[in-house]
Length: 383
Image (cartoon, rainbow, N blue to C red; front, side, top):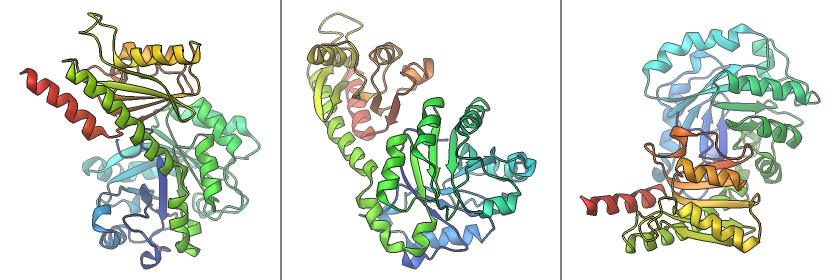
């Protein structure tokens, strides 16, 4: 379940096999979404469509994740990379809560696809959607934020790894930023938002409110030429560029550790586009097991600002924080954590996955290969 998660944010292009015109979409090496979702409420030959889609993609974009967004069990295809295993929790029709899921379970289980258990929560966007007609269910009232949030909390308690807030295809009104914020504050799983988003400004507003992935489909059916505009003015693209810039600086710190025969882990802390703290591993130099890169950087940052809390800061570290450092990050109330290489043996996710501040967000895998290579180089030399 690695393709769609909080560690990979971005923009998803939704293509309906019955409606999409692949020849009209200007997908290029320089203009492409982060994901392609494939699906619809009524049908279409999913397998043939995905094969045609792969032929149309530029060669370097063949690794662009193609994720199934199925309306029913017949839309499963092993040609995709992953599947949102959807359950319509906003409606009361058991056929779409668990019935269609049972019908497709064997095929999904036996396939190579990454699967993401996903709660599908339909919110009234001002029009009757195909989902409403096909499932015979009603959307949630956008004014009833409590019920919407409670539904999402229930989804997380039931083990869903993602929540899809959907205003519906062709919605007049998208999911409001107030709803997105309320849900984001209540749950920690991946938050996907779609329906009725027609401008880059609306897309970026959803990101700022807490959406991890924003989905746009219907708009590009009539305005395919605007795909480039959304790619160019996507706040997440700018954020990813910043993440790589600061992770490179963290790597510079890691190289300082390497030159001192320390485990090469580096960290920088940024607030309002200014580096307020830097650090690298110093456990051998200081003969102190707590002298990890993150601890050094947090100490430097608090001295820079003259206070112990860093709520507006982003911490960049080359390797997933250990439980000790994660605890310090949590106590410092750092709001965003970005790391490069995972550490499945000693990382915080193995021991304390909820240790950060409840509103903190995590982005993993930034310059992962470079960060991993540095660690491997160090331990290879030790053998």
